Image 1 (cartoon, rainbow, N blue to C red):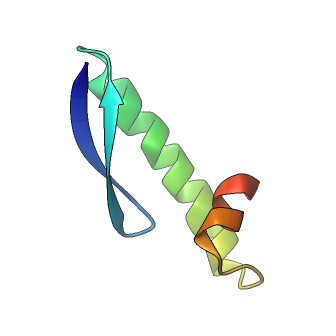
Image 2 (cartoon, rainbow, N blue to C red; image 1 turned 135 degrees about the vertical axis):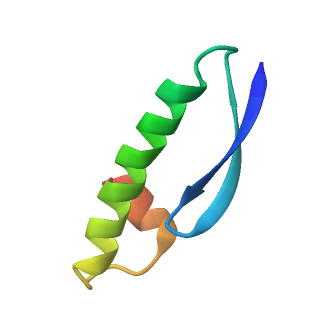
Length: 55
């Protein structure tokens, strides 16, 4: 299992992923980051954990 560092809403996270799946993991993280940023930017919810659940 390989570990990669990825940004989500401006914060760095270290995630484990299978060898050779780094590109797929990065793509998935980008989709999550985009969804979370849209929810945050809508202005109604500020708590990171609630935004994550909604995303």
